[in-house]
Image 1 (cartoon, one colour):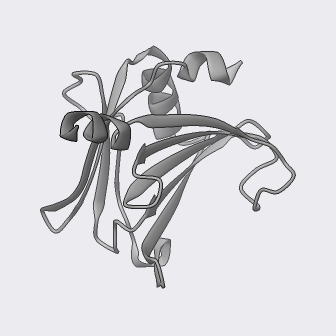
Image 2 (tube, helix red, strand yellow):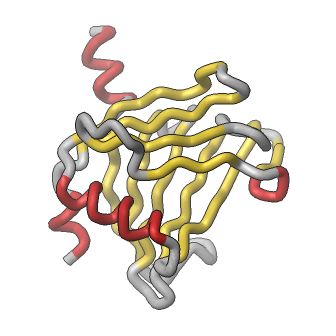
Image 3 (cartoon, helix red, strand yellow):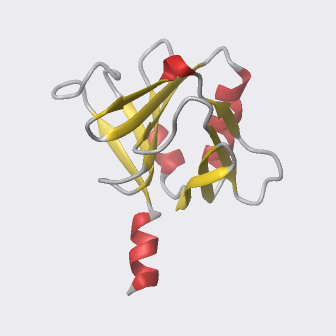
Length: 148
């Protein structure tokens, strides 16, 4: 039971967000979530509307100075690595929330998109001053198909 629960928690959720009922994220986006729905997680929103960009959000994990890294498959270098600045993180009733926007003009945008399209598994880690706060492995199955 514990193993199946862990796989469920670590699963990557691919959803489509339409314009109605959504916040100002985008008119249409592909959402990828690593982590628990009601607990610590990281969401990657690939916006289809122009200008293209990726919005990376963490919930209940990450503070200013935290590092997020995303490795795809067995790559030695991360597809994405970012150190959160003070202006990117906020605290509320539900804990910390951090957000960073990766515009299409940033080389990281192409790297993330290419590796997510061709990869099978993504490993998302967030650590605060070297202390691991989140480490989730999730499937990328269906991501390429959802981009069409």
